[in-house]
Image 1 (cartoon, rainbow, N blue to C red):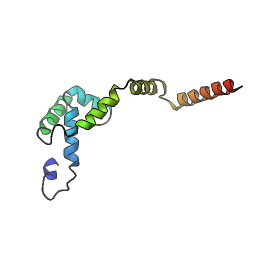
Image 2 (tube, rainbow, N blue to C red):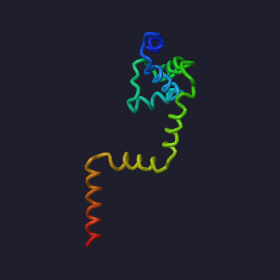
Image 3 (tube, helix red, strand yellow):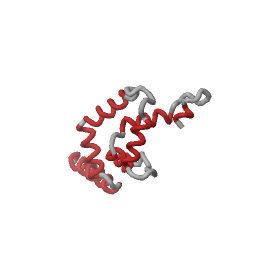
Image 4 (spheres, rainbow, N blue to C red):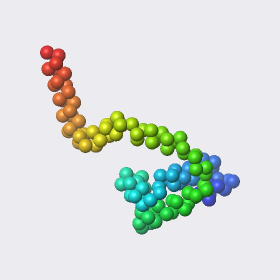
Length: 118
């Protein structure tokens, strides 16, 4: 598909090439593939995660400028480094998995608000 996108008659959006280059930047080892599979970003039908990592590391060589996604990666890293975002994500993941816990929290806040108003 990358070869097709490079043809003169193909559309100029380079969607597949861009996606492969972005994954090339994200994937270095089999652990990276495992993480992407656990989040349902990749679906592996090739065999081992090592095979997938090797394929992306080979395919992505010299497709585009390595710094093409530098701003995107910097934004992701900046978002990841904010402790508040990490705390919120952990709180949501650990304490608000069920809609019942969300409703119980809202009810508790409303009750506390009602008691403080009296």
